[in-house]
Length: 337
Image (cartoon, rainbow, N blue to C red):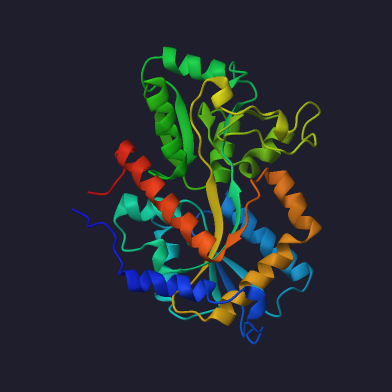
């Protein structure tokens, strides 16, 4: 039986103290990277985390925000465990950063891999990512309510839901939908969000719960249809992406009778044992990136929930969300035994 993760109060306090010992502005910028920055993506290519990392890589180079290049490296093995363990072992190396999604919580809980977010150094939350229920444009289900009612009426396992990985965010949402409907689906895992969207375009599955940015181009092309967003409120973006609709036109799932809510972290972590001035460097870098007009365009395009955090506020958020995922995964039967 896998033992639950534990750390001494002193260790956790040390991490927190390192992050919040002084405001970023108060720490002298005495450190800069001396070699290329390795930007680890613990997920496959084409997905939301990969797209955000490559966007950051591009705008940092365009505006000369770093003297050293940023090099994106995908380490998706073991549902992201490959990337997290590589970061955990890179003690005190300030030339590595990792972009995290909710597999920061789900992978160790589902696999028992010896990793926890406290093994790394939290830097900042860049945003929260939404999940949208998508169907093929030619699907007979034109609303989330119609899809959900059809799912409840169909024989068990009739509906095929595609998602990124097993026992991760997408399957958690699928299980929440199953519990709400009282009906099982067939969940089919794929390597990345880009592949999931392609499978839906090809009608190999009936629906997905992709992030907006992972399916946005297919929606523009008239191949996919968004039915609802798994959040308390509609996405605020009102610019038309098609000739008829914007992200703001997509209703909440709850308003359609699908009582499921879930958002996902897009955050930055460093290796353990890094110095305050090194954390300050990256926080300053991401503050500059968030101030760019390109960042606003990227947030609009991907319909992200804009929520930036750092320091103690971010640490507290991580602790609460780890517990939320532990409860969700226990209810789904996904905890490693």
